[in-house]
Each structure stands twice: as C-alpha cells, then as structure tokens.
Length: 223
Image (cartoon, rainbow, N blue to C red):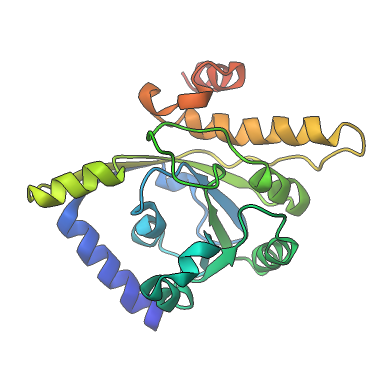
C-alpha cells in the first residue's frame, strides 16, 4: 500500500518536472527474477524505475553512505533499498540480492557503481557481471539520458521541464565463470554488460566504451 502511494507521488512529481521518451519497454519482463542494469548520471535515476516499470517487486542497492540521510533512510523500506558497501566485497548483500531474484524479484543496479561525473559512461565494476554469472538471471540493459543533476537543477530554476530518455535493450544471459582465467572471463562479462548499455546511448554518452570493439559489433548487428 505504501509503495503504491509512493509510486503515485513519484509519477506526479516527475510528470511535473520532466518530459519522457520511453523506448523498448517491451524488452523489460513484467514478471520473474532479472537484473536491470543502467547507466547512472544523476540523482533522479534512483526513482525513475518506479515511474517506468509497473512492478511492485523491484529492489535497488544503494551506497551505505546514503543510509545517513534521513529521508532516504525513511524511504529505504517502502522502496526496497539495500544499503551496500561499495568499496569492499559485501557478501551478505550479494547473497540477499540473489535470494530476492530467486523469489522472482527484479534487481535495479548501476554497473558503474556511482554517478558518472561527466554524464558519459565510466568503466564498469565487476560486481554486476559476477551477480549475473553466479545467479544465471537475465540482464536487461537500459540507457538513460537527460538526468544529469546540473541540467535538472538548471531547468527547475528556470521553470523548464527536463527531457529524459530511457531505452530498454533485449535481455541476455552471462555464462557462468570458468574455473580457469576467471578474472579475464569476469572482465569480458563486465565489458559485455557495459557495451550493451553503451549501444543504447547517443555517442556523447558512451564514454569509456565509445571505441570498444564489442560495442561497435552490437551497433552493427542492430542495424
């Protein structure tokens, strides 16, 4: 009940301050465990998913530092947030995330691990690839544009709406990591996830993956 009220409030506020162009919605399953992996460029990213995806079983890992912010801590329960340690292996959080996906819930996560300071993709961290490989659940890539904090704040000051685009890609599965060359396989899996996201973004947002061979291959295949 609380989540539905919060979702209605989020949609009301976002519709007041943003214009949305949502693409590839059909690529996001409405049931079952999965990993929705998106780029992270602004604070609004945290709540966009509740505007776009009509599921009540979403959960989001959030850096533990935000647990010190009163209003975020208050929303953590209703919005199914999990506070995680970004700088050390958080095995407890990993086990909890896998358990929730096994219950059919949807994980929302940013492979970069933090907001990009430039708006363009920074190198992805291996955590999401490890989760995907270990759990076997499909990854749905999502590209976000227009939520950079400086743009949203500037538009609010000038009473303008921010133009935000969300693009969902087709689900794919990361194979289990082999016993040999695990680090190399994990890096390849991380690159795969990041390149799938990059291929959904305009060139100016692709950042570290602009010239990546796998990203170019994905773009050629999509034409």
